[in-house]
Amino acid sequence: MEERILKKTAIFIAAVSLAVCLALPFFPRLKTASGEFLTAVKEYRTKTKAERLDMTGLELMAYHMEQTAKEMGEAPSFPSQIRLELPFGVSGGDLEVVREDIAQKITIRIPYAGEDYMYEYPMLGSGESIENLSYKYEKNYGILEFLMEQVYEPDVGYDEDYFYLDFLSPQELYNNVVVIDAGHGGSETGTVKQGICEKDINLDIVIRLKEMFDASKEPVGVYYTRTTDENPNSEQRMRLAEKTGADFVISVHNNATESGRMSSIQGTLAIYAEDEKEGEFSSGHLAQICLEEVTAAAGSSNKGIRPGKKEEKILYGTIPAVIIEAGFMTNETELGNLCTREYQGKIAKGIYNAVMRAFEEGY
Image 1 (cartoon, rainbow, N blue to C red):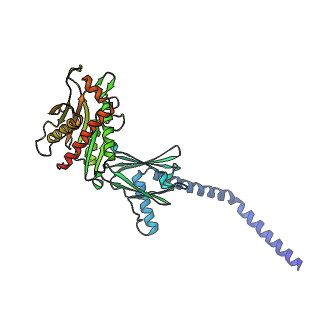
Image 2 (image 1 turned 45 degrees about the vertical axis):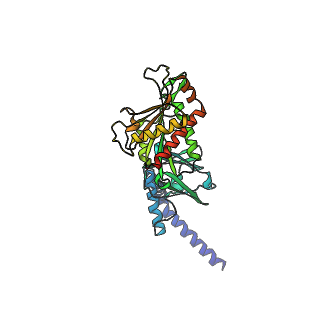
Image 3 (image 1 turned 30 degrees about the horizontal axis):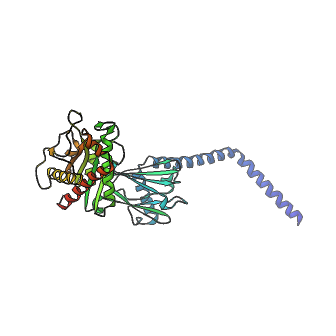
């Protein structure tokens, strides 16, 4: 018995030895083939990711929609235009959504979303009304930027796994829409008297006005060209009116004498588009409404209305527009009043009343 086992073992060892001897010449080739296979796999993966990296954000979202539809056998559905998958440990309430109306941009900051968030957590949805979609990573935050075709307000919701995003137009949210423009800003100071810049008074009045609209329950959508010390150019200011579909625009400024010297001249002036036809809903009529309401609320002198110059570009877009020259900075008394919160509030109240009256009259 033992002899038979030893004999079989010897035969097995001999067979294995022979196989090894025969295979030895091929080992380098097998090693090379294995290396080539691993390299090919690595190149394939790298190539696939590189191809995806060359996609725009919208193309990548469409690609993920297509792949998901193939896996599911049908197009994915969810109760929103965009669905974002939340990173592990992140709640929907942790995401920060910021609107920049002057740029028609909506930004979402996602904590702990890494550089490859767009690949690890595929975003699904429709690119309708989105001009461009981009993603970047900064200091433990992933930042999604949606550049929209017009001004939209984000409508958000979330559950345990996903963050949902819809884009609503001003007309879907409000009965009436107005754009308020604080004149000048940034390096454009406007008139400067006694170290006081017109841009700051204009903005202060608009901030008082914003407080009134924010507290109001009226279904009016109000959009602002600026609420900080910045200086959007004329095209951006006019485009905001067009992209919101505003019913009209009111631009807040302050006046000065032609010579720039201090004088006794004071009061409120309203300016409208020079070559616009007269009519019930013209800029001229809107200017008259603004003049009447501001002088009544502030108790300022009525300096009338006048047609605007071509360089006053805010007047010459496609939307009715009026410039309110609230007061004269070259009048000592009026300059003092314009610097007080109380008087700024009166000017703001007059503009608020003008907006509401214009809408009541059918603008």
